[in-house]
Image 1: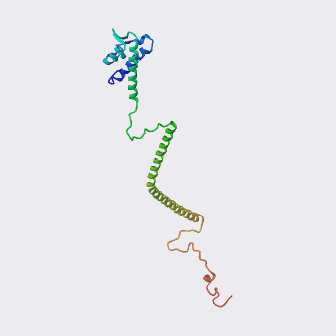
Image 2: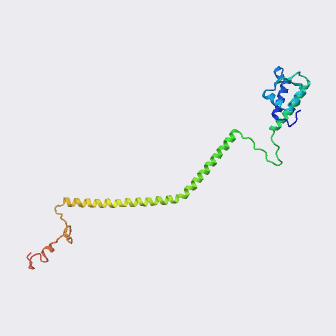
Image 3: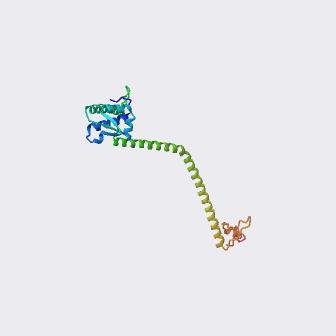
Length: 218
């Protein structure tokens, strides 16, 4: 069989050429064009040409030709195919595990993977919500203080507006009184007569004796 140092791609070509020639009756498998891609690789490998020669192949002009099928072809083909299969299988075989190494994780089904993805998304959403709550709690006291100050300013504005409205109503009522009362006249400074509600009694007007001169005229 070929040595392990033979390039794997050349080893594969050697296997295919020998296997096809040994198992397929079509004459086209008995000739390889050395100027083609596969023929060039084989022709450039002295070891590959040696193996083909031992199986009955020879160079005729620009081609590699199998002159006859025989036991040599079958024997060499089987040996090359077995050695190639061993090399190809060894390349796909996983590396041996170190002693005590944990076993590789089991392959998840589509449902299991979808459930894990959903759990990961939920965890990320909960984490984001927690961060938002933490950030908002640090500003809640400031927000409350700002809201209280705004409420106080609003009450002050409303109270000032109420006082202003009450003063306006009083001024309007006083204007109506001056307009509709023919006896109203501007009051001089210190004059307390206008607007006085004190009533004059009979005694105030005529005195203690009622105007009879003390003689009891009544």
